[in-house]
Amino acid sequence: EIAIGVKKEVDFAAWYTNVLIKADMLDYYSVSGCYILKPWSYSIWEQIQEWFNARIKEMGVENAYFPMFVSSKVLEREKDHIEGFSPEVAWVTRAGQSDLEEPIAIRPTSETAMYPYYAKWIKSYRDLPLKLNQWNSVVRWEFKNPQPFLRTREFLWQEGHTAHLTKHEADQEVLEILDLYRRVYEDLLAVPVITGIKSEKEKFAGGLYTTTIEGFIPTSGRGIQAATSHCLGQNFSRPEMFNIVVEDPNDPTGQGKTYVWQNSWGLSTRTIGVMVMVHGDNQGLVLPPRVASLQVVIVPCGVTAKFTDEDRKRINDACLDLEKTLKKSGVRAKADLRDGYTPGYKFNDWEQKGVPLRLELGPNDLSRSQTLSVRRDTGVKAPLPLGELETAVPKLLETIQSDMYTRAKDTYFSRLKAVTKWEDVVPTLDAKCIVVMPWCEVEKCEDDIKERSARGSEQTDERAPSAGAKSLAIPFDQSRWPAIEPGKTKCPACGHDAKRWTMFGRSY
Ligand SMILES: O=C1CCCN[C@@H]1CCCn1cnc2cc(F)c(Cl)cc2c1=O
Ligand SMILES: [Mg+2]
Image 1 (cartoon, rainbow, N blue to C red):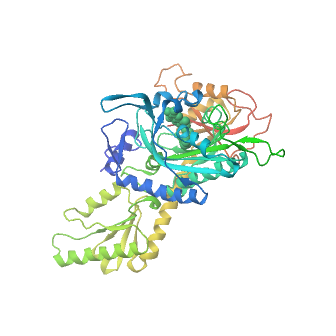
Image 2: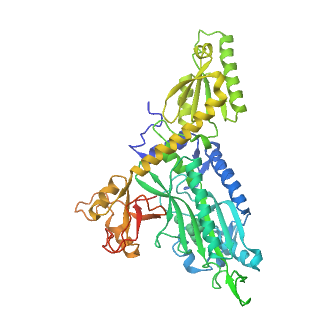
Image 3: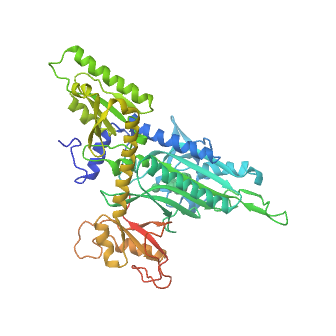
């Protein structure tokens, strides 16, 4: 039976929320747009945190904590930084019965909370580089319909904010962090991403450039910005902004000053939503073993009513032995000895929760001193000799991890369509694919593409118009597509000279 009650390809939005509820990942909360992260999903965030935290510390980044409150005069420090964002800023206006003198913003991101203090603390080039990170939550009072993990009014993330003496140093770190983000998705979550740079229109307006990892959700055919690493340039350190300036040791006169070069980078619990959408199926969640809080569940089988109590005990003890053996070899395993539930019920329960591997153990298995393994990702069953579990199970988990990644990567790449003729754009988007175009990189052209690619815009029939395509990224790796011949290859949208292959698509 369809455990989730609705098929993924039939009603994706309903499937998504059903999976999250049935897998006990979250619960709805009394404030709309907010969700409770239950242990089954929070443990995934903890795995990501542990992995990422260790690696940024190796880079010399230190964790700190700034207050969540930002005074209005500080937040509005630079009009154009927050223009466009201000409708989503949440404000504290009252405490108890009394109104506050000045409303206080709840941080939507921490640049304006942190950088006045960067200016205070950075007095000499010897104070550089300053590399601080925060694990916190931010609030953005979005009005578009919320989606758990993907668009919520409060979300958990990390936000790194660094200051450097030179652009070169900042440029290097931007890419180093971006590669860590790529690895969080590809190595931990088995989710493929494409690294690249954002167009001028799509970048963080307050920065110099934005690098990004772009995910892809095959079921909806939409791209999704999976994490970003911005170089802010000197935009936030210049005098009109936070005036973060040091003497320049590289200046031959010895009198020179330089504004510091800054980066900021963020990865959020959106990671979890992407992982659910990419790997989940009609039985529910499918967890990559690397981040599964439970990697192996052991279920006693074949124990029927006619069995004596000591038979039942013999099987249960054997399951407990398996659990102990696996735990000793570093596998997160658990024997499900719950009374009153049939094996079938337990199978369904753990399949919905996405546990990567099930080991069934019945009297026949015991007599052959083997256990029947069942993979969650493919359903493939294979007997494993009890004596070889310490090596066979970790190996099988690694195989599951890499197979999940390979399958997702093959799907992603099969949906990247090189398009050189405008008439192929909308059909490609409608086929739930991403358009990769030799693009001119002119912002006006980008606006046109978005407008002209909104389905139902050019055709006469007013079918439900769907959002146009926006540029997702200019991939760093251009070698996947035929070389663009400067002055020869033309942009399919406007006919100007194309510069680089660029991904366009509908997106979250
Ligand atoms: O994306 C990241 C990584 C982590 C640190 N921050 C940057 C830029 C954040 C842009 N951004 C994003 N959303 C915002 C919402 C707001 F209400 C206000 Cl006032 C500002 C912003 C805003 O600057
Ligand atoms: Mg936003």
